[in-house]
Image 1 (tube, rainbow, N blue to C red):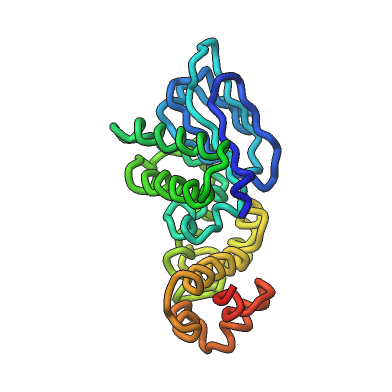
Image 2: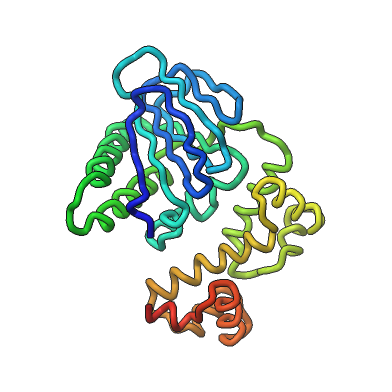
Length: 267
């Protein structure tokens, strides 16, 4: 699951993106840095914040003249975020990493020390040879994301706020809420008062995939979780997810994953 590819480093010097197309970045800036440049746009006065950076962004942390650490940068491979323990969390379900905006979370009072403690433990584990290291890192990541979900002020983004980006964000959020009831792009386009063609154009421009792909991704994520972590029958899971029959659910799942629901459950 690529746990061995998780990297973490303190912000001690100017730091630039590694241009890895499969790696997301969590940047925790504890103490104010000189600046943060993202896709050639410079942001000032960034402190006590957590930023989530999609691989498509080119970024640079301008450290300034101070010698002490200004926080941490955590590099997470895409497949780690698909782990069932993390995939049900709000921050991952809504796919803030992929919305075309750059989520910037201002930490609530008292959370800073907990955030630092979690990242320090991840830092220690990444470089260790301890037994059950993978489980421990996943547990810490889950705790970290839970705090981000519930204890941070998710109100600001470090991004230009254009209409197409907002539409795509609204679409992804609506899919997260309604995908168990409707699988058709036309339904979501109607809810958002746009045509399916225009919605698809916006999604492709912002995310690089089709609108249908977003719906499929959400269905597969929920299917995998239910198959691995619930006792529901395959028939029950299919109906819960809005499929008209167990056969259609199995066909859908195998078409997009290459394996059957029963094979995944037994793996």
